[in-house]
Image 1 (spheres, helix red, strand yellow):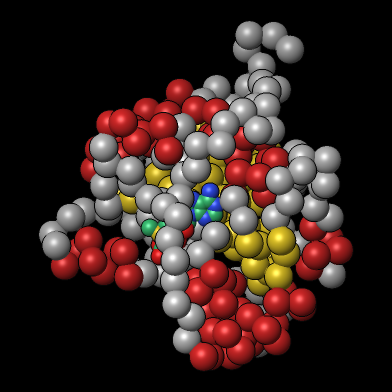
Image 2: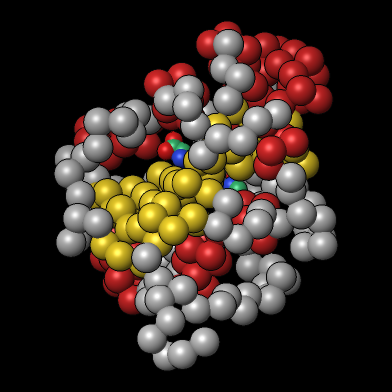
Length: 237
Ligand SMILES: C[S@@+](CC[C@H](N)C(=O)[O-])C[C@H]1O[C@@H](n2cnc3c(N)ncnc32)[C@H](O)[C@@H]1O
């Protein structure tokens, strides 16, 4: 590797840190969500292993070879389900820690008859470490927890080591799309993404809101409060 290598080797130790990027939260599930989880988990679910020696076989998981979009922190799953329904040529792998959100997405998968969605339960960073290099067509990080206090910035998912890890799993030309309504985080994301030597800024700064990104509760809340939303799209060089 030379200093000009656009895709430097990533050396993120698997368990470099147990600093989590999510809030531990309890959530009550509705009867419908409990039912969806019981019936649909075995067909569409994947438990994320913390063991980096347990790679995920994406072709086996989806039962075909198609471009794959990784949806990090899929929340209640509405955006994932809408995008997957609109984009049947690609497969969508959602990863979330919040069980009611996972169950909700499973219900949507059934109701909309989506064959191209799988739902992983666990830490997205562990999942990403278990994916082959270059295996993703796109990574979406929509409205990640902003961790606004300075002492919590280390919990943010968009930070240099995580971006290098995500970039290594993108295919050449694959995109990393982030969106946030937290202006200071947006600026930090922009700096971090621009500084990554293997990423190219597709729009030269903030992108216009892409039509294919559905409006979720977080975006509606931001717009109602008068906060702008920032989209950033970078692609692997
Ligand atoms: C603010 S919510 C946004 C949800 C969704 N993307 C949306 O726009 O509606 C952030 C979500 O990311 C999840 N999350 C944060 N860090 C995560 C991680 N390391 N692995 C999996 N999920 C994570 C949280 O549980 C939470 O549901």
